[in-house]
Image (cartoon, rainbow, N blue to C red; front, side, top):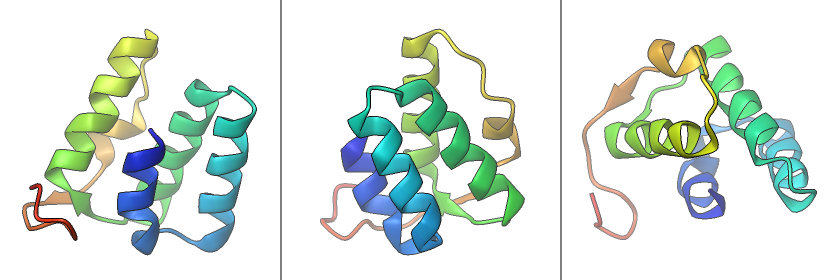
Length: 84
């Protein structure tokens, strides 16, 4: 999840990025994912479709349902490293 956060940090408010990273460091990946998705939805931030799909995989792998995932706007495009 760190790699995904690195990829979308440009879209986030600094407080959100910092809080999500802190939760990840403390082993709270589920809460970090929920916070990240809720902030993206609340601020109506569009993210690359590939990242949205990765967030959904993380949620599934953790066995949690993040309702905000359905609300996230996404776009297709090219990442910084050209991987999508």
